[in-house]
Length: 317
Image (cartoon, rainbow, N blue to C red; front, top):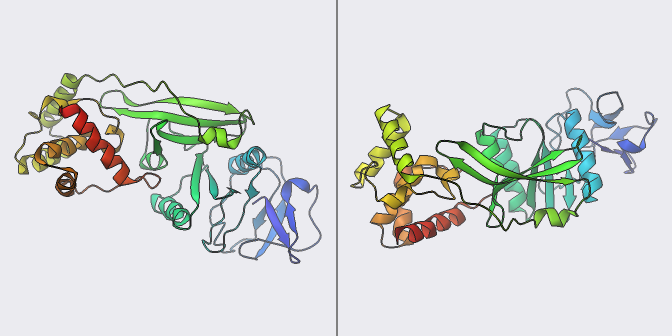
């Protein structure tokens, strides 16, 4: 942590200290004792004593995390490590109702979801920025995908932070291609190049469509069946129970989608259900056969389903 308190309630910033304070210091959240640390690798910071249980600092802070937090605090000018007692959470930086969390180490999907939903429940907008180890490269795990947000202007996107380069990254227009894997664009801002609000409001007026050959995709599905892919066989069974065949769906069902990222090949089931439903509500009822778990806490599932349905309407004309 970068802030501690004296027992009289006076806040001390680690960056302002050149030597260990003589008076006792406590954590602003749990009120347990902390010590001042200043070394060659990590920025000056405060740390709990061994075996201390703190509800607001349950995860260790790496050198990268401390550096990123200090860097973004300089950019945003928000409240550093503002403890929210009603939530029993402490965002790295708080700017009005914007709770900024910088994540540099892996955490469980359950813990991430719990923190995110707790912010949302109490009227805060969580903004997660990923450090070097978590920023996706060629492979995207469940956690990287879960950090994504969606807007029409940016498409599917997530944020990264690189304090050493003094940059904020926007990874946006993220798509999943059945053959190429994940493709995306990157926008970088140098230190204070733009105010915080400009980053969040950034739009790209030239979001390009993904090259996608629907005949090749249909062959891709047929090949998975031939190779006894378990997920495709399960999907085929669900479509078959509704009277269809995954290899002979209407041609438009194999066309490119802005939302393949969320569903991958299961999108074929959503599109086939569209051919069996008279309206949106009937379509939603049919989707229950898919038994699909939504794993994107920053994105409303209903919003994406509406967009998928509208996409089906356009393609099916």
